[in-house]
Amino acid sequence: MNDRRIWWFFIVPCMLVAVAVVMSLAAVFQYSFREFVPGSLETGGFTLDNFYSIGRPVYFLVILDTLLISFLTAVFCLLLSYPVAYALVRTQSEWVRTLLVILSITPLFTGEIVRTYAWMLVLGSDGFINSTLMALGIVSRPVQFMYTKFGVIVALVHFSMPVMIIMLATAVSHVNRDFEKAAANLGAAPLTVFWRVTVPLTMAGIVASTVVIFAWTMSAFATPQLIGGGKVLMISNLVYLQGLSSFNFPIAAVLSAVAFIVAVGSLALVQPFVTRLERRVAEQ
Amino acid sequence: MAIRMKGLLAAAILLAGTGIASAQDKLVVSIWGGNWRDGAQEAIATEFTKRTGIEVQFITGGTMDRLTKAKLSAGAPEADVTLTTSHVAYLYSSDNLFEKLDTSKIPNLKDAYPVAQRSPYTIGLYSYVYAPAYRTDLMPADYKITSWKDLWSDQLKDKLGLPDFDPSHIIIAAAKLSGADVKDWKEGIPMLEKLKPNIKAFYQSDATSQELMKTGETPVQVLLSINAYHQMSQGIPIKLVIPEEGGVVGIDAVGISAGTKMADAAYEFINTALDPQVQEKLCGIYKCSPMNSKAHVSAELAAMPGIFTSVEELQKQILVDDETRAKLLPEWKSWFTENMTR
Image (cartoon, rainbow over all chains, first blue to last red; front, side):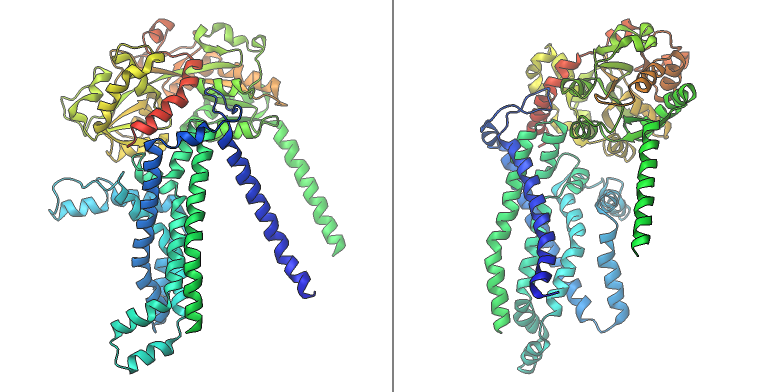
């Protein structure tokens, strides 16, 4: 098989998937321009009113909440995942590496609903944390973790960590150890080597993984639905409430378009920065 | 190699053919999962199979999810018969997803209360109420609810759970407490806004309602009577109260999918479901009120809150017609999402 035929072998499936995605997005977005007819599953004629409707404060606030929750999830995920990824790559002990892999990666295979239900048991009024706090006399009545942004972010961070650990571990494993050794030989303390050499050399991975987690959290549904208990709404929950619960497909389509544009826009904004960083690291 | 491939292909075609044949022998019924499906299997499907020899295959899902699926598979319906809430059934029929019923093929309908004939497309099978319910072990011993307005009490701050998939019950109650008709529900908005401090969480399904009640996160809920009794049967100490203004009545209805190839069996399924003995058994399992006036309701069941044995009793409750409710529901949900969830 010559080179060109090999390329077609990869390109054709990619194009088929791309066409399917674009067509399904177009099928959803065309509802944005349709009139909502109460008491019917069918939509009416052409209108732009749906775009004005999302100017209502509640939609704006839910979009802001979604951005805030996604940003905080990405940041906390990074702070917690980097040390794990670093230890995973750098440990000399095989059993420590195995343990870290089991603890950090296996949650990926349990599914979002199972993990979210587990967090409900931990964060609930009579859950593990509140029972412990009350048994130790630290609090006299249960602390409200469920149905708060805090609870949603905790569960989302846990949900996203395995993916970020894999991405960061890849970045750490690509660091040329000679640079770190050179810095140490020149008298830099281990912490200085870490902050001035290792972290900058993994910056492209840090930015890329943070953006991926930010964009992926933008579409979170089950976790805010269950932990948020309807009191914490993200865009996906609003899309579900308006689209599949109220059958207001036009508004749901506009909200989906907004979520899509924000997610893709954030990736597009950061991409040049990641490319520049990758180029700089390659030049070093 | 080629021979083996041909053999596999032939086997696949044969298997596919067998699958099609077996699917056509079964009546596919769309219903909610859990105790809803189990009850319908035990009371209706078993009797239907005994009478006709046709097996029933249930496909389950949430109210709106099933409606979405039905819309997507219009013309080639996945289910032959659908059981759903009567005002949602209105949406099925308004979008031509149900076929117009030939009531001469449902002889048991003659003994049903007039309220059972929901529309030319749907028949009500049983009724229930949405009403306040509370955990007796988590509320003070002298705590009681007599009216919907008790849900506004300061005592319930951060204790109340409401369904977010259908806020109609609390909206209807607020309208009634404000002296307004359901169509003028906006007169109840000031009351609804005053309820916000009491709402701790919204439940999205029967399962999350049960979870919130079981863990005590929301010891007071506006709850479907059938679910309240199901939770009681699971050992959760709950008291269901029919307020003096009445509970908000719900009726679960059945319709036949437009384009079904099992129409005769579907009619027989509905007729079986309306049979007095089947109704008695079904309502004994669900703890609901039968639609067939000839169905016997035991004294024990009749004494339970939310069980009605006559049209007169039913009409003392809050009844909203399906069309009004179906048309107002999107408006109610939008308003509720925008104003009550934050």
